[in-house]
Image 1 (cartoon, helix red, strand yellow):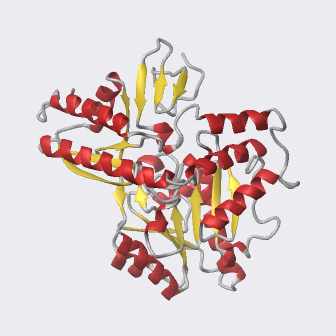
Image 2 (cartoon, rainbow, N blue to C red):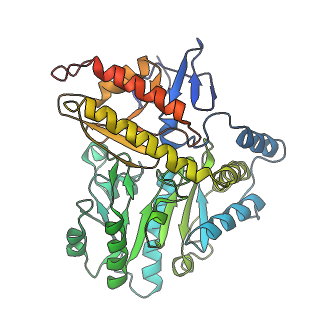
Image 3 (cartoon, rainbow, N blue to C red):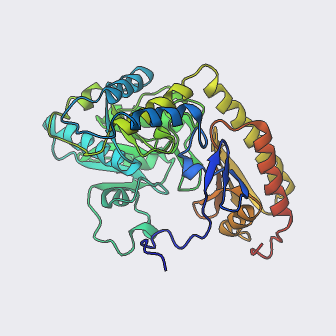
Length: 396
């Protein structure tokens, strides 16, 4: 019996090594990884530049406190500032931490402006912002809240993508609007460019902050460094993690000048946030993502993946109800007669790793270095599995 707390169930499959888009178990079986640790290993496995950066830093210094300057952290922050709307960055260790930091920034900003009553955040149905008590309270998903009540107050939820409901929820206590440009865990629900633009207009109209959770969409996965860059707006706060370290734990909360000004010494902190190892990894990832042509490759491969999924959906129209997503964050939603978890297991048995989402969706989240041949192999496996499933019998 495992001594690990069973919060992840009892998985039996383990991997011994990885190379590029592939993982290998102890018996040498190869798996095509279209899960990437749930959008984490952006450069694939064992990327030489990332591995070298981590090895070099490990041979010098693993950790010391943020009471002292960390050069790699200074460099990474400046690079993110130069590439985005932000004027400063707080480094942490995960997506949930980066969202919690953003919530604190929103409250502190309004408190410093003389409006401490403005402490509530509008969130969206279907959202996921992490597993801490505050982020569970923000997302309000019953399956995640069960057994952990009482939840924290301070969050008002509205239907995702509905601007009228957002506006109706605004009161004199509202501090910010928190939304994911694409809801990953919620089922690859995509916010239109118009919706994001109008959220910015609404926030400006009412003196609110626009806070984007780009934990899953950031670091190039959408085909831009961050997904908001497909629109005409700039957020006030943005959370990032997952692909940030390419597999090494790391998170970041980005904020513009007016929000950054509220976070003076002592207002927030993290023992491990922005440590030398994490920053070596993050800078290495950013080196690759910002190379000429890299993000264009993501856009190109995203189109190949979408086209292929739509072709399969057309062949299996009684099984797949919709294909949706952005860049290399794509999903297929099944008809009610097909159970996504069963399809995930069937794909795994044939050497393709995917991950479920929402009520009945499978996510395809390949490494950003994926090539057309890898996508073709994944699509062929999906087509084969679906061909063997009777839509009237959800068990493959």
